[in-house]
Amino acid sequence: MQERWYHIWIGLLLLASVQPVFVRANEKDVREEVLLTTDRSMYFAGSQVLFKADIRRQGSDHPEASSTVLYLEVFDPANRVVVQQKSPVNGGTSIGSILLPEDLVTGTYFIRAYTQVMRNRGPEHFWTNQLLVIHPGKKPEVPLMKAVTDGPVPPGCPMAPPMPCGLQTDRVVYHPGEVVHVRMTSSAGAHLSVRVVPSGAFRESHNGLQYRMKPPAARLDQQTAWYPEIRGISISGRVVYAGTQTPCSGVRVYVGVKDGEEQFHVTHTDSSGYFVVGLQHLAQHQKVFITTEKQSDQRFQILVNNNFSPDFATLPMQPMKIDSDDLGMINMLYIARQAQVSDTLLHVKRLDTVAWLPNPFQGAGQRILLKDYVEIPSMAEVFNEIVPYVSVHENKGKRMIETFDARSNTPFRHPLVLLDCIPFEDHEALLALLPSQVESVEVISDYFLIGGVSVEGLINISTYQHNLGGLALPLEGVSVEMDGFAQLTEQHVVQTSLQDVRALIYWNPEVELNNGQASLQFPVNDVEGSYDVIVTGLTESGERIFDTQTFQLKP
Image 1 (spheres, rainbow, N blue to C red):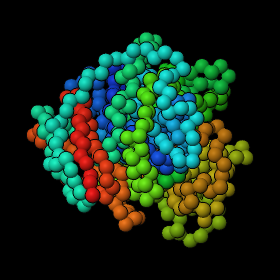
Image 2: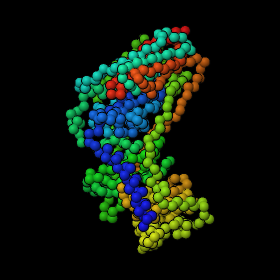
Image 3: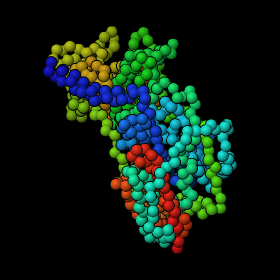
């Protein structure tokens, strides 16, 4: 009895640790905003867009955002998405890069950033910047000077002018190889991003286009449907009855990830059939399997939400004017692109990921490694001979795997049986696996609490290849392809020419104004021309900062 209460107590502790997440996530007045800044506004196809995003919570004494996931998309004026990416948010900040496809045609594109909870207010509230992408071999589909949309653009909400930060350089003229010293002063603390690019490559007027839009009145009172992702990327959806398409409430939902880091989650649908599960350490491209409990007299259908918003706003494009003064700047970008040094990160800090929840099975049961035993010809014998508290019995010609309580010998006739963290009810298929394919079997021979759901015994079979041992996914579930966080890797400048022809001379997205002051320095390149030191960011009270200083580089 003491051991049983121990397992239940551990389960209650896990539930208690998760409970505050749902209390916060169900607040109906959560509103977040994003300030997205990029290293510049003009790129060649195949270049990297370096970005920093500050995510804040509106109307709260604690402005740090609840969300831990930022969604970014690059799309053209026809709303055709060319890049989608998820980036982790840590301490209200997300820093990373987006690789533009090599085959983009020359033209105007947009980059937008948002969190899941921002979808409640519509795409008119997503932070949106305009970009110009140039491909020397592909002409634009529409004239670059075109600055009108298909319909009238309503007047937007007023945007307060940004504050300066007292930006100064020690000189206005430099020579190749010299170092620029920069100083910033302000009466308020601030979190800043600094970039140094050829003059004209960054255009502040093309940032924050959402301030020039007025959201439809119908969206302002829209019912909340999206909640903050507090512990990493989530997957959500609804369970409905297959025949009537009406919502199914209180249905148990299982979510498993079999590739990479194995995960298993259990939850219930709410009164509207809605469910949401946090996939705490999802990275790169993964397959996520979702299924429901079986009910003999009902068939369920699982409808999975798209992580990315399918809705787009009518955007007020700004004219991307290119005149003779810009040709020198574009030529510098092109030379740097050809030399393959234009997009190397000159300053990068690898963000720590959010604190993940522990493995729900760790320490809760017994794990048997099959390699520790002599070779056994069948899985039925593995369960009957070496796996404790598990046996195979036959009922009406069908073999079933069951667990039993070691203290009372009470059988659990319907334990939860997993293969590579995916629920399987076809026990005959599991028993047909070859023992040589199986690495381990974990057993919890007791009542087990996971995700607020009590399970009567659990068996988790893990294969060496994490490929279900070649078995097909159960037909009653759905398999969803999901992208996790893009991997952040350290990058260094690689000089591939005798000259330093970098177009991005400096990029630092993590400058802090401590006591109202900050200073930094950087070496210039070898290309004659005009360069801008551009500072963007937020004060601690949420006011926008923008300042710029120009210097000349001469031989």
